[in-house]
Length: 338
Ligand code: EPU
Image 1 (spheres, protein in one colour):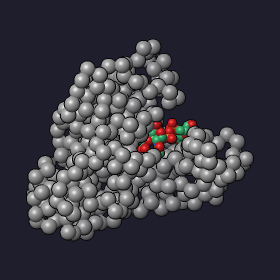
Image 2 (cartoon, rainbow, N blue to C red):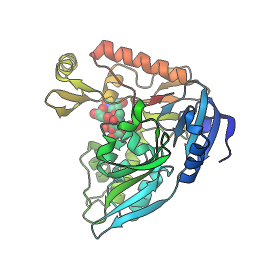
Image 3 (cartoon, rainbow, N blue to C red):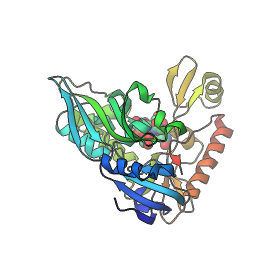
Image 4 (cartoon, rainbow, N blue to C red):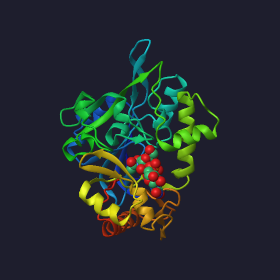
């Protein structure tokens, strides 16, 4: 666990911003956490980074950064229909999905190619193409940095919502995710093909009886066509959430913009496609200094290189204000600003 003093975090955030932390420590196993606890490390400020794909670094950090590199996977239980399998929080998410697909364990295939690590998947309740990871999570093992104990939280304990869970709230920041257990099918996979582009992509690929591998490939192809690869162009996926809007506010916006894209939520709320709002407001492909709005998906803010995190946060605020002025709708950030 050799801590690195005054380390650059450039390599550890997918926007590629170059800020420093006072010390950087890689955690490779649960004993490392116990050692840090014994040294009173958690009495001081700290933050955890996994894949660094959902953070915007705007300033140097005076505390310690833990790089979650808890690896491995192991089976909890299995029968002829399904398997419960656990993956270490530091495992790469996409490689985990590919491993499941290769073994014909169904359930995560729609979540292919999402950047980041397994440990971030419950924090964010990652979702794409008609699936949210909460639908497949059995439990989440965490280290409680105040008591020095490992605790297993059930799916209900995590109180998952749209891109949300208890782990995003300040009062649970003392918990570090160490592993996640998923419930996956071995036969009779329930394929989710309803999300518009998937059917279209399968048709393009001449697939009429899709397997989970076909679905994974279709999702990979769609994501590659729309979303920038962080290894090539700095970004953090969707910067904004799709806002859940009260009916009267939505109706007022719809009156002005009848073609507004929306999804039903309940009798009094709808979810509005933030990408549509931002594109309609004219921001898609916009560039300012070293940052901009992706030309193929308006929800994604991009860093062309050599810039600062504040450029992204000020662009995000400009977009937020403009969307509010034009549509009366408040956009929330999906990305955590540090
Ligand atoms: N749209 C536009 N312009 C855009 C983007 C989208 O008009 O620039 C419209 C589309 O035409 C469509 C609707 O908005 O009618 C929804 O678009 P899309 O299917 O691309 O999905 P999204 O709502 O923009 C969400 C997730 C993505 C996920 C996709 C696919 C959020 C905040 N984003 O985007 O997740 O990949 O669905 O399921 O929920 C992420 O969270 O980082 C992320 C990339």
